[in-house]
Amino acid sequence: MPLFLRALPLSFLTLWHYVFWLPLVLIICIPFLLLALIPFVGIVVATAIATFISFAGFRSALAACGKDNEPSFGKLIGSSLSLSVINILISILFIMISIGVGMGLAYIDVTPDFTAPGLEDFPIETGYASLIYLLLSSLYYCAMAVPMVALAAAATPGGRNPGPFYGFGSGLFSILVAWGVWIAGLFFLGFFASFLDGVTFGMQTAVTNMFGVPLEEEITIDWWFLALAVAYMLWGTCWFCTTAVLAWDRTVHRWAKVPSEIVPIERISTDDLRALREARMPGRNQ
Image (cartoon, rainbow, N blue to C red; front, side, top):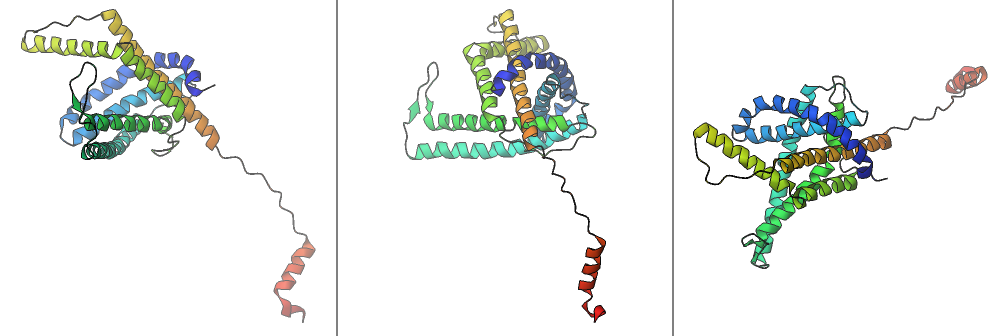
């Protein structure tokens, strides 16, 4: 059975752990949000915070799969910082590749613009560059899922760091399926739009209460559908993380060292030792 199907029933148990882990992780991240406002440093901090929150999902999936252990927040923070630097460098590389493709399309004059339903015309080279960047980033994130699980599992007081790329690309098909189905559901079921409406409503309400700015147009929120959208986003994250944990567990078993066979050592007799000694000292018997 594919990993993404095996992960489906376990994802609900992961969700049970995740709803307890996530608030704690968000509270830990709050003091670091001010550092995210510092130029340049803020990019690393913001990426590290996002990575640290992702570790909460992987730790919850490990617990659901019976692989739970005592966490070390210091190691989790260290892994988040190191991965954030790697992810930023990879992201810059992907941006350069995407821009290069867009400039190449513009140079050969491929169809000057493109019309999408409900949107204004935009240069096709820009659209292709954005699409390529999205695809590369998605593939990279899915390929890094197993290494992130390995780091999350090793983040214990006595754990050994497996490195940032342990199992890179393992279980990629199942992880991509889980991620793709989840993202498709967000957009096609209207959950993403409902979530954005909820965020916009919350920001408008906060600005109105803090600064007394009247709302030009009040947003109507379907609270039941918004709650369903939030639940779907949390569950989809858990499904993705659980699939990655199963892929990591399979990788660990595949990479486990096979115990070497014990080869019996033949004992050397006294006569053999005497013959060997005499052979090394030929002048003694002359």
